[in-house]
Image (tube, rainbow, N blue to C red):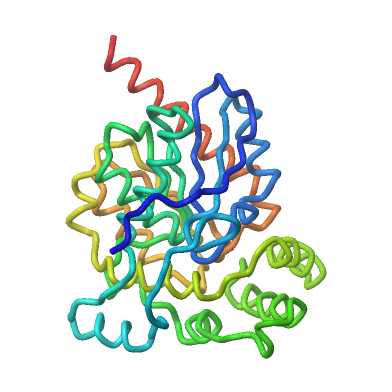
Length: 301
């Protein structure tokens, strides 16, 4: 594992004197994956919102790797219950997040993670309980393979590659097709909307080797259900009822293994952040943060 400090690129939105909501994005997704409208809605509720690029993604540091990642071999080993070696794990990525908090002078924050970011957020809440005011895990999983295996079409889309990885337009077209498979059935984006949003990220940075290593970190970290039982932060689990990539059963399983967790199931939501759902998501998360902060204050009184 590589736990050496890395540069972490971040953006802050809102009043610097307000409580912090720290957003952790998913597999291969940059900080731009958090919609601006969502971040602004949270800031309008009185929070300082910080979003950042995970290691091996966007403009953050890239972890050194001595050899090419073999995901199929790693998946086969995990399926057989064998250990999987990885340059780093979800625990290292959680450590990156804490390191960013240290750098910014943030003692405690409300932690929100999506997909792979939800896994990182869970590990952070379990390993660093003193740094977490509340936890929100979105479209994520406990690592329990029995309930989190993607259906074949989504799995195929996730593991597919662009026709020409060196051509930005080819990469954008590939990602448009992928999000067409895993997106929200009730809130579909047009191809033009997808191209515009995805193009913004691809032209900012595109690093497929990092995506593979992040996925390997997830596989190597295995089943976290025992770890989830140690989480003490007030927790909200949000999952789309129609998620084509991470089944709803994975969200239910996550909530069942975190003591006192609340589960919010959103009908028609898939594995993305459709603009139409941003007000609802921002309200649910801000309400959860407000309630968690009030409970902490009441306990301290």
